Image 1: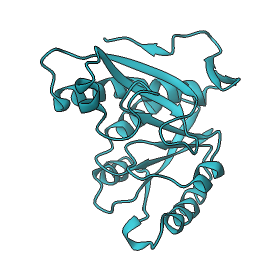
Image 2: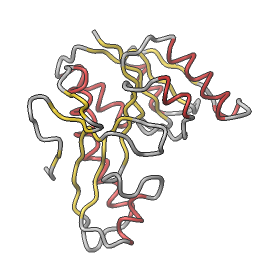
Image 3: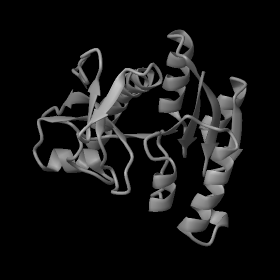
Image 4: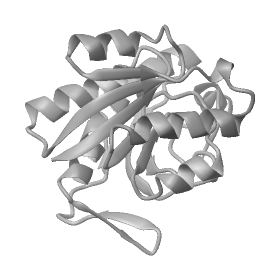
Length: 210
């Protein structure tokens, strides 16, 4: 039974989607902890209601990113995870942290990477005249919002879209995409070959609009 730790900073809607799928689909895994850098994160309350362990490592109490990441690693490792998921975790992680969890650290980003890494993805996509936006699940590497792509979801950009409206539809797609990708991972259905992630059963790694 694989052990999953989820890192969050806010309400944790992706964490909730993953928790639901883990139970509903009978994954050979369980979420053993939800950890946040913000004491008031709503995701912590939800996790506690589900009987899942929670922890807080407040980044404001640490003098440097390195000190924060070291404290965070100590807490995470206490749960002995096989997989660590970034689910709206709004911290840039140090190379040392990423390397410590190399090969078992996944993130979801609200764009079709490698386009629009970083923040303000929806505004930037609209301003660039993109006709498609979306989300990407990828393995985390030291380069921000890069790393082998596990799966992507496509969301059309409407002519009258605002960043907020587009963000809401992309988030809906994320709630389908992230559990799908994590389910593949814990069932051993993915392989990394030459920096490219493949599904061993040749399932499509691209989700089209529902």
